[in-house]
Image (tube, rainbow, N blue to C red):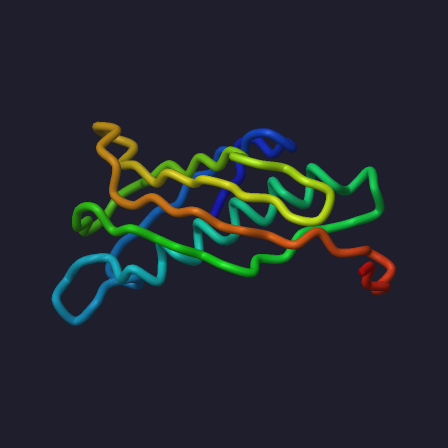
Length: 121
């Protein structure tokens, strides 16, 4: 995954997908999308709480697979739905770079955790 921009309110990244990510049936495995969704949401959510001495860890990832894809560049865009004191909720859209059609979308709930290892609550 190559990050184009990372911020507390939006993350944009790109991935080249192909045979290395294929199922035995020749299409990209859903795990590639789930991993990309979790990664983009975590990077953005962590950017949002870094100034508070925290980072974010995923606690729930729901991914919908909308259409098959064989190979090529895909765009990953993550944006927050909610950013609270202890948890965040991010939405991530993965689309084909060539025509913008959505391949998968996901929602990740994340817990804000102290960088020094101490847990609150």
